[in-house]
Amino acid sequence: MTSATIIGCGIIGLTKAIKLQGSGFKVTIVAKEGFENALSNKVGAIWFPFEIQPKEKANRWATLAYREYQKDITKDNGVTFIPFITAYNDDSDTDWIQQLPKGSVREALPNELPIGMEKGLMSTVPLAEPQLYLPYLFSRFKHSGGIFKKRTVSSLEEASTLDKLVINCTGLGARQLCNDVDLLPMRGQILRCHKMNIPSYTDSTKKGALSYVINRSEDCVIGGTDYDNDWNTNVEANDTRLIVERLLNGGSSQNEPDIIEEIVGLRPKRHAVRFEFDSRFPNMFHNYGHGGAGFTVAWGCAIEVVEHVNN
Image (tube, rainbow, N blue to C red; front, side, top):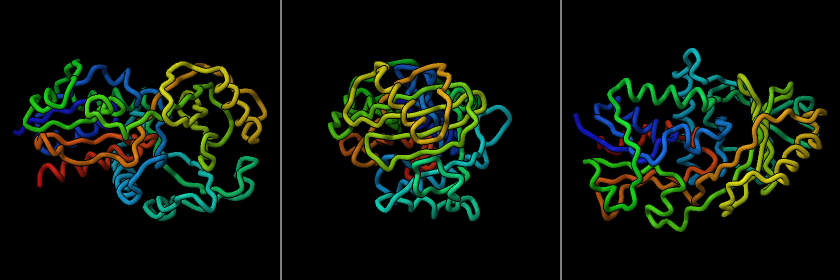
């Protein structure tokens, strides 16, 4: 059995670990925080390729992930398939719909669209609720002999000594670890609310005015913001008001949402996802910079990483 160490315990790291275990590796996860404190635990976690490049690879990863979620629906693990409306315009990239199974996407009818949305696609997509899915994945990892170590890794030199194979899934932390100035935060603020009788949708056609609703089993996530190079991790009352106003003005709801929690997370945005072996340390593979599409492409990236390693 070959050994490998993953740095990072979010959705990107956990899926890598499980796929490597399935390929015969003994896997250790090293991270400064457990999955419960990772960015992955703060998000809506709907399948949607948001703010991610390169497009062709992202679509392929998303397709592989879609199929993986189809196989990974078990009792109480948080995975369901829900109807989801995606706004688009003439400038939108809609190539992702070609990757979906036949019959799972169509043009939304006018009476299905939130007020103010001119065109939208109605698709059936995976939802992986983090509060259920991340513990489930971690349990799978541990049950297969996985070891978790809480530790901060400060340099690539240090990282390279961790194992025969080391995979860097540190998200925004890779900016410091790899001195990657191309990696920047995209600040997201969301509202976790009591369930609402409104459709799930996203409208990312206007930069700086991201709006979405994700209905989950016990709550509803309403968003959001997409501010580039914004390191502010504080909840801002102005952003909460903006999110609520977009919801009400968009016609999705006539009632104010009943807010349970306000959450801020920094998405790891890069000109393109880094997916490659390190030029200085050949036993290290880097995979980070997934923007707002971590849950969308994580399984696909994990599958391809295993193929790269085995080859």
